[in-house]
Image (cartoon, rainbow, N blue to C red; front, side, top):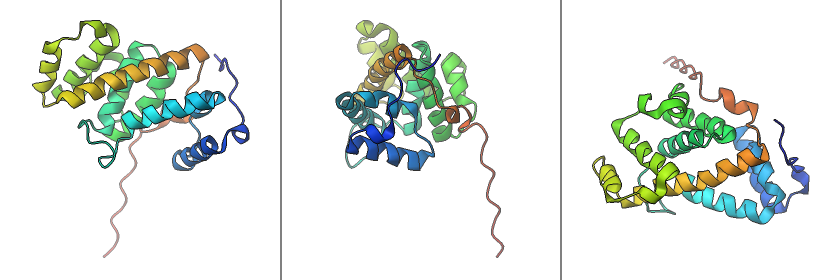
Length: 202
């Protein structure tokens, strides 16, 4: 299904958004469609990516909260996006999950059935909590937080898991409603391990 809303021309975007998109393009080698799809409404684009970055691109100097790794954050997105049937987010964030975890199979496993995936018991507990937030947030109780504590998570980690799940619930629905399609580049990213560099001759 094609995008329901045509992607805007990069050159028509406000300067700050255009600069950010070009920065992403230089780093990734392509422009993920979400950066253009949401840019049709610049104020919403800025708010969306400000919150996205606060949750997903946390730097210790800027945000002292929580201990989740980048791979674990992407694991939450992939699992809950699959439950929400969001093609864009499963494909795009599954690619990042494979790269951060250095496991070519993990994204498919997590998306289909995280309880059978090659992940740690700690990560499985994390996803159990995320899935309850995703499907039954009104039923979260102290016992759910205690289950996280038993695996070494603290209250700030619980907040991060819930916030990531909730934020991407919004993202999932906007991507699906608008017909946003994953870039073809995402499908292959992180699936084939890079060959080890040969040792230099001494």
